[in-house]
Image: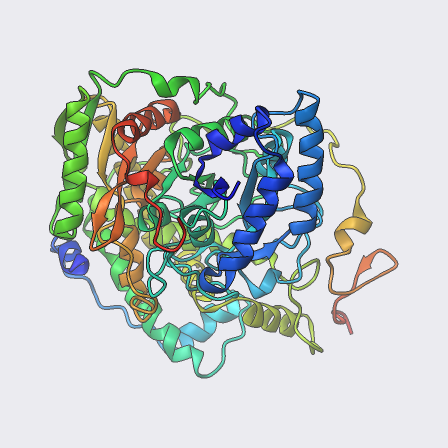
Length: 487
Length: 112
């Protein structure tokens, strides 16, 4: 079968269970695709072909015996910040270029237990700090829709791999939009769950009050399936919330009629590309056609999301990245003169420019005399943004708007000025600050480039958000479009 | 265009906040980051710009607002019983260390 890659993750799992083909055949076919397109896309940092084929043989034995889990035999990729036992976990950084994780992240272990097969680790912005995948030590990832453009970031490798149909699904993480923004720019579905929904044990930390693991897939139904297998309480993560995991797949079919949709007024302002806005408004009409009602809601403090984020995230990053000291793991400089020289040169050499910029910003805003003015002030404004969301959800079920201001931009176009790059996350950061679940689904094209519709729900409403996304995808086919050359 | 859109929300004048070379050097020293002579002016410029940008928060009235400490309202960090849950896997963990001897991590001499 030559067209494995045109199947969704849900379909592949069902076909494997029905033994229409073997996991070895499927895994081999996708590994060949990864190899063929790696030069053009640079979506992977490591490919684990031998281990994948060995796992596929094991999956085939389970399938033959009628055992196995929901994902048995299905190849997936992990963003290279999920720890994978015995496999390099680089985080896109020179600092961890030589780091072989001694254990699996909980997400990795759970997907493995569900039967998924890891084919490799995907490229990403260094330590997930970036919106274009240009800060990776392993070079930029290219957008499958146009190789001169960025795929978005920081989960750019996972997004490009799914968009190019190299894998049917991939894990990703979202601190300020790192799942939803690349999903939008690559024309796929991306889900950031509620803070605490998915375990962060073994997920390399960037900003601990914002980081959350999630998925990049072709469809919302695929995202529901992967999330169901990944989510749930984990005693090893102190931020994991002990609340039951609903069957997200079963919830997909619920009717949409009566859904109250809030249009985020602040997101439809003049910063939004006109054509992008048109696609989003067309998508909203589709929801009306499905029986949903629309009303405009205003979250007055939301425009302050970006400055709040660029205080809180660097502050937490500077604390988290203090662990990279060249002593226990990671890069160590050559022939250090003394301990301080070892710290300074190991970190100076091991971190790239954007990571250093954020560490220094964070160090500054947390330093004596500035803590109140910057960090505490930002956390106060964050509380106001959170209150805006809570108020909005008293009158609507979900909020909708664009995922990004524009479609994908050129590689190199925004690297000169950090603020220009940071503002690319203006529509996604709010959900991180408030810990809310949000999904981006493809909703059309602008000049042959995909654009995304964002759906944000109240805490732990993943089932509702995915249900709305799925209802949209049942009557549209934007998510099924494949970039030229990858069909 | 986005930047122009963004600036409309902030009418309060921000004090332009230019960091000096010395300040950058001192932040880098606190963060234990070796910077080259060429890197310092780059960070001087971009950090100043970031601080000016986040200065937009000053215009927001936050009197009586309690700073948010956890993204899920009403939840706080969970505690666990003080019991040993980890087994000894020192050899496995030290396989990633740059330099070890006899189960110890080696670093440059600290005490003369």
